[in-house]
Length: 232
Image 1 (cartoon, rainbow, N blue to C red):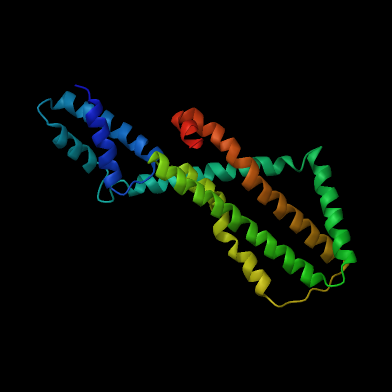
Image 2 (cartoon, rainbow, N blue to C red; image 1 turned 60 degrees about the vertical axis):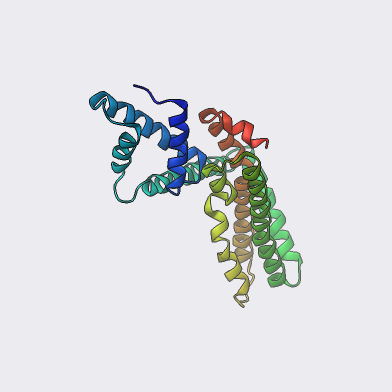
């Protein structure tokens, strides 16, 4: 016996009612439940749909679907940073490494020229901290609009919109800004600061511009309907 389209639709509603708000996670759980229910029917053909659904759901234990959602979040976050690291490493190979050296030289020269180096560093870190807030804010507004239009919310979008969780650690830079501490700007210190600022800037660029498009390409192969929703 196979599930009807109405029963599949009911499974989506059932999964969503168990605090699973993301459509991609819902789809995986519905596929799992549907396959399990059909296997149960082979063993116990007299079971009603509701009974079979209940037996299948009990297999998830007392935490229900929450463990699956957490696992999927970790999986997507790990995938996000895996691609970020792969792209980041590419900047240490020719020809991109020449760009890194050039930018470090530019930052070093700026530090060498400006009279108030602490003010320059503070201003830069403020801008560096604000950019993720602006990007995340715009993405959250877009996702809310798309959710209202399509009725679907994706875990992929949630991970993507927070820059793989990087957004949540930008408070570290806020703390750096608030620390009143003057450096002795020796040549070595200026070089270290310039290198750090460049690498952080490259990482932020990768997280904002490069990784999302690469993952969207992968995701649309797994969920073709995501491409249609992406345009909403």
